Length: 304
Ligand SMILES: Cc1cc2nc3c(=O)[nH]c(=O)nc-3n(C[C@H](O)[C@H](O)[C@H](O)COP(=O)(O)O)c2cc1C
Ligand code: SF4
Ligand code: SF4
Image 1 (cartoon, rainbow, N blue to C red):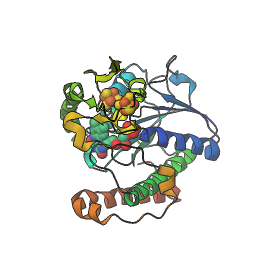
Image 2 (cartoon, rainbow, N blue to C red):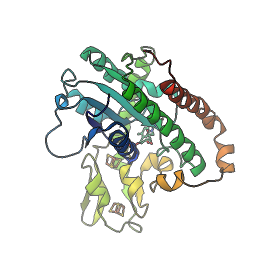
Image 3 (tube, helix red, strand yellow):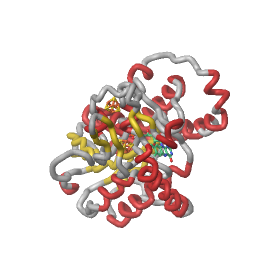
Image 4 (cartoon, helix red, strand yellow):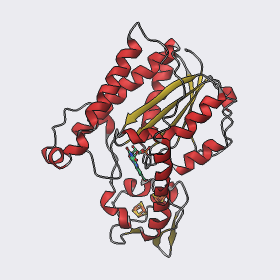
C-alpha cells in the first residue's frame, strides 16, 4: 500500500503514544507517500469519518493489560465496517506477554469487520508508573521501536496482511485486570498539590483529560473522575503533585527522547542490580523486534 490516506487515532496520557504516532506520521508521509491525519480522541470537533481513509491505525498506551477506559469508550462509538484497512500500534513500559490482552476486543471487532489488517505492533517506551528508566535502557527501547516501525512500513508497502486474531487464553486475564480502573476513582481524591511547591501555573487543571482537577480558593483539588493516566504528575513543572498511594510509583519530568536517542548513555549499575528480574524480560522483546524486521524485509514473506 502506498500513497493513500491514513488516520492515526490515538490517546496519550503522558505523551509517549503521541511521540510515537508523530514519528509514524512522518515516516508514512516521507517513505510511503501517505497523507496522514493525526487525531487524538481528546481533539475538539467532529470525530473523523473512518470511511475517508485507506488505513486507520489505532494507537494507545497499555494500562493494566488493557487499553485506557476513555480510549475503549471512544472506540465503541466507531463503526469499523466503514474503514478500509486497519492496524494497531500499542505501547507500554514493559514487554510482558499479558500486555497482549489489551487489544482483545479491538481485534475481535476488526476480524468481524472483515477488513484487511496490517498487524498489531507492540512498541515500548519508558515507564511512568513504577520507576524512572535510565537512559541506556530507554535507548534500547527506542532502537527496538525503530525496527518495529521499519517492519510495519515494509509490510504495508508490500501489502502483507495478517489475521486479526486474539489470544483467547489471555482475554479472561485482561478482563480481570479491568478492576484496576477502580484505582483512579478511589485514589484520586487523595492526590494533592504541595502548597510550598505549587506555582499555580494551572497546567494540571488545563491538561487533565477528564477535567478532574480544579483550583478552589487558590488550592489545587482533585475529584474522583481519574483515569490514572499520570499526566498531571508527570508534567508538573515543580513536581508538586503527591499521588497518595501511587506517589512512590510516579515519575516527574518527560524523557528527552530525541537527546537520548543521539547520545551514548552509560549503563546505570544500581538500576541493573535492583531490577535484574524486570530487565530479563527485555531481550525477548528485542528478538521479536529484530525478527519482525528481518521477516518484513526478507524475500520470503508470506501471510501468517
Ligand atoms: C495506570 C497505568 C497502568 C499501566 N499498566 C501497564 C501495564 O499493564 N503494562 C505495561 O507494560 N505498562 C503499563 N503502564 C505503563 C504505560 O503503558 C507506559 O508508561 C506508556 O508509555 C504510557 O504512554 P502515554 O505516555 O502515551 O500515556 C501503565 C501506566 C499507567 C499510568
Ligand atoms: S501543574 Fe503543578 S505547579 Fe502547576 S498548578 Fe498544577 S500542581 Fe501547581
Ligand atoms: S487527575 Fe491526573 S492522573 Fe487523573 S486523569 Fe487527570 S491528569 Fe490523569
